[in-house]
Structure formats: structure tokens, C-alpha cells
Length: 153
Image (tube, rainbow, N blue to C red; front, side, top):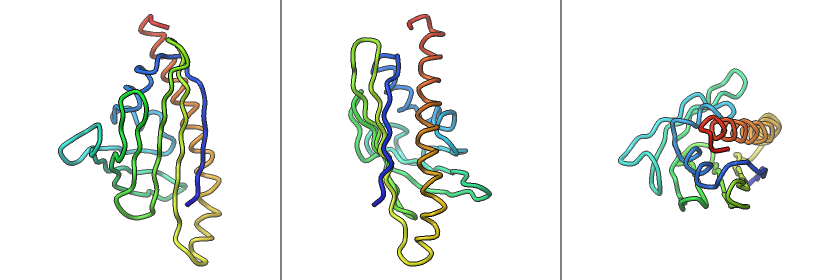
């Protein structure tokens, strides 16, 4: 399993950060490359919620089904693939004080073996690292901008 990790501090309270990330409707606005993120099944948030997702990687669209496999309010959200390329993303939240939150993400994926897997790894590896960094920066900026616009920041 390959892991890409990134962390940052957002100038918003932990509940604001968690609620924004936990709302599936926001995902395409901050997650790099994601063009669709739609719930299916009984829940649209929390443990057991499932989503259809589409991500653009170059000229290709990769589709996947994801499930929330770990969820604790204001602490952690973990999504895992239900099929296809094995992957997961874990977002962790920690209040630094009343107005700052430490955010960390761990994106993990497993590629198929053999020559095809190695070729895919050379293509996807740099994309994933840039996508995680870009997503965190976009997310942090959106959080801080929306929080300030509400007059709370």
C-alpha cells in the first residue's frame, strides 16, 4: 500500500472544519480532480454512508464507489473503496485552540502488480501527491474564507 500524507493548520474551529468536509456536497469544490461525489444507499454522512465518485486524471475519468468506514464527530473521517483500485483517504482533525484546527490527510492506494501496475504507479504517483497538496490548500482556503464571511473569523 502506498501512502501520501499531508498536514496543515486551518484558522477555523474544529467543528467548522469537520462539518464542511463531512458535507458531501462540498467535496467537488475542494477535492482536486473530483467531478462527482454522490451518495447512494441509506445515509449521506456518517459511518456506513456510501458514495459514487468520479475523478479526472488526465484525459481519463476514474469512477469508484466509496464507503465511510470510520467516522467520529470532530475527529476523523475515513473513506474506503468498495471495489476497483484499492484506496482509502483518512482525514483527521485536532483542535489547536478555539480558532485553529490541525488537519491531516492520509491517502493510501494499492496498485495491481506486474508491468501494468508499475506503469500506472509512475503515472498516478505524482498526480496523487499533487492532488493531495492541492486539495488541502483549496480546502483550507475555502474554510477560512467562508468562516470569515460569516463574521466569525
